[in-house]
Image (cartoon, rainbow, N blue to C red; front, side, top):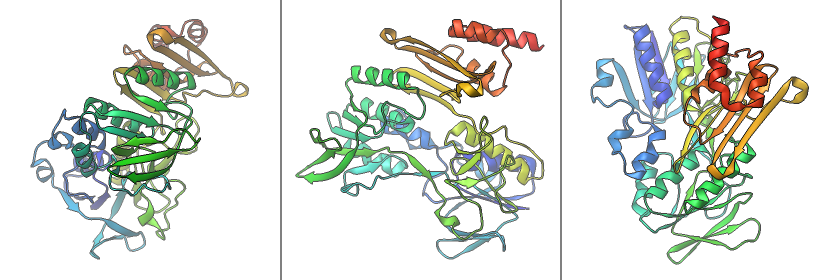
Length: 418
């Protein structure tokens, strides 16, 4: 059995290691297109911050890790896939055959269609090479403009602040982390960040970037004062890496469509991670959910099915935990709630002065989503209640009256189930 895995990030690597455990004699080839050992993009900001070296970003620290497990690392870019002949073609024209194929190519950063986005001091922060280029320019006191205040943007912001940069953030949404936080929670994060010395503009966009001498000047959408910077970081979101699949016959929406076995529409081709539209935990419909815990779970499910062991995914579930300049926030599941006509109810607890916030969202007596700010104890319990679809019964009314009692509700419902 010959397994090819396109993409050597956490998804691809976990799949490779799972396959090796399940099939000791199989051939396993892990393909990546960067001149680095498999590494974590989530570790790049910590490298940029200076807390770790390049080797600290590597997913496995031992130099002989892959050789010991007979996982072949192949540096190459895949140009197309032929599921009929069961081959892939590489950019250099070489071909590799497979019995089972996993596509784990992840995402790429979006560059808005804005004049000046190709100027030398405008960067994304997605690869180690990106981080090296940024580190050379983001010196203490450097004026840095960042486009985007989503999850990745906030992690990058943390690293830039640690380097002593003078930061300005521009976010098109009406709050920080708009795809992770409720309106109130996102607004509170904005106030926290501003108190830490970062300038934040929401409901705003950059319309053009111009080079003026040694500086960059960014024009803003609502005619405000242009922003002058030494460096611009684009953290405006990501999109799945699916371009090489054109003409393959693999069904694609916004990402690769997969079933709950992580199989694509084509036999013996699987996909996992940021590149997929997987079945949603709550909706039952295809959803893009570029979150590492989901990606790793999907990798294991895909590997088991590739090895002939039927395994089903529970579905894609939002799982976010973020440290923003010392303020811890989290959101799980369908944190935005359900419609009243669908049985949706919710409760918010707001303490703006102490930067503490809690939102619980229910469908009938089941917790389907939660958002927290400033809470660090037992928040994993919220994820557990959501993921197990625990019926809370009378505990729901108690939580509506006092949402801070979620730990007691977890223990109480667990005892009832036992």
